[in-house]
Image (cartoon, rainbow, N blue to C red; front, side, top):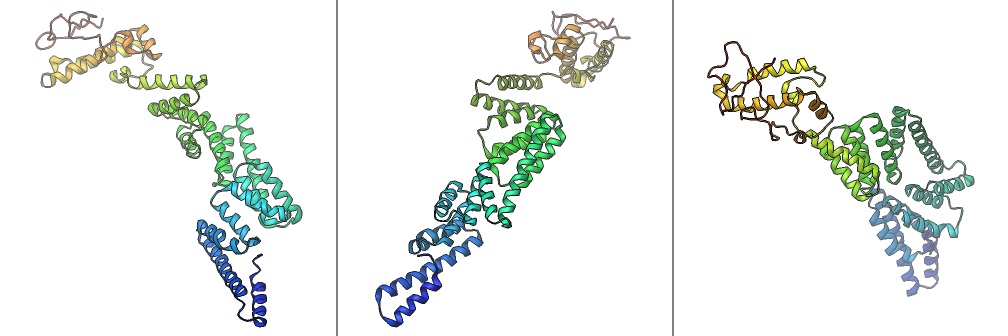
Length: 390
């Protein structure tokens, strides 16, 4: 019953010497050998990493014939721990500790189960009780001080983040994460803390990676979605930012902070798809009015359709872009509004967005005075479109 198989086998054999052929005893001896072999097989399967097979041997054979086998119960708890069935570990070790409250192996296994459920206070109490019984127990010492160091490093990371020591905080979070990569129930919060710190540091790509790790553990973590959205804004992944923040807003519709972040992301996505008038004119965003005019004049001359007879269609398209860019950037009020991020369509501009056509009649008139003029004299399409740089 207790799986003291050698002693039991010796007793059965002595009995059979005195009472040969006793069927009930021969049957129990056969069951003993079956249970003994199954326990040995369970240990072998544990060493090879087939933990489900371990449970099969123990539940179906060993504990059927030897329900009081402490070795089998502890091995079962170890297999359940390896399978990350922490609630079952707590239940199984609870039965052991009811019979023997000072069982060090059961205290260690139960403590580890609570630890991996991130119930660190209860885990610590189990480790401490075991160490009071045996202060030199190596596995209990390793578990207890490992937990203490993890909590200490986490607190350091959080304190440094609160003090604005963001680079130090980030390194603390990384160190804490390296201490036990398998502690997912706790590491999800470390990844989130690291992501928030990296966002504040402006390190978008690293922050995306950290928040993604958190979401791989808990896909419903709204904070991680929000922070990854902010990180994608930093990395100019506007579509990704909108996607994450929209999902976060759906999960937490009352959070105004998320809604504001989503609005920022949607605005940036919209801006990213608009024409870059500065790029079209080949100037910086700090260009002066004179520089804008010079760039416009140079490009207008370069892309005048009458000077590009072999690629007239391309030239006309380019000239429309150049003219539309100058209509915005050459007007101080429109330029300020454009720099502020206002929609070009709201200004009734062209360049593919609507209203301005340098080849049509109407609209703003420009008069060019070129030495010698252009071949063919003017532009097609009527309307007497002329240019004057003043």
